[in-house]
Image 1 (spheres, rainbow, N blue to C red):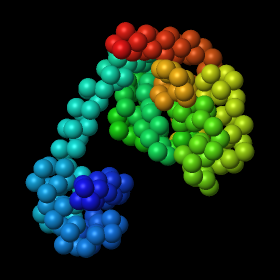
Image 2 (image 1 turned 135 degrees about the horizontal axis):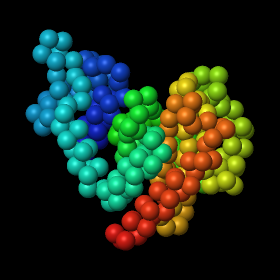
Image 3 (image 1 turned 135 degrees about the vertical axis):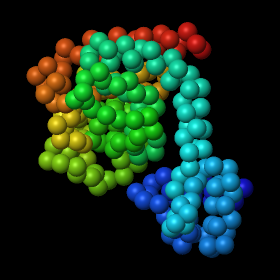
Image 4 (image 1 turned 90 degrees about the vertical axis):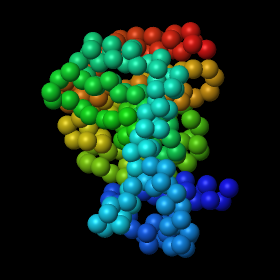
Length: 248
């Protein structure tokens, strides 16, 4: 069991790294001897879950993980049920549409429908974004109690640009507005020039665990025109919920 835990830690370490890592770095990050780390990495490499550069001997995640991830996405009831409706929302609005779930301290994107426009917001399946600086993240936080929300946020809040809300009190006030209005906004708080909207998808009791969002250049979605997009988003939410209930 300990070896499985260490293997998972190695995969997470490689996944969070911005570059391939050497054996010594991996062993240090995971808290293993170089010999133990090497043995686990060798097993993961044989299984295709990590790859090793022949010239530098450094390690990175392998293509086998992408294959497994694709199978998870394809088999997930939510993703299958939502795919057609998300694509329809992107077609109606002309903007990129996403589904995200709460994963520890981030919004994790599980489904994407791209915008047909050449100038568009881009996020891929498997991408992660900070909760406090995205409309999806705000929706996923808004219906949690404050103590739980703070554990997911782990202040201090990172500043990405001059629009990012870094005050916990200001963010909590905004989350209260999200609960009242039923949707969240993001006006260039993560990426300059990109804005977004999100709504919760409610399945069963408890806080919503799924967010549906739209993102676009701020010239096309902004504080002056966003209300025109809300009915299409609500329709997509209703269609996805109906589809999920029909599959239950």
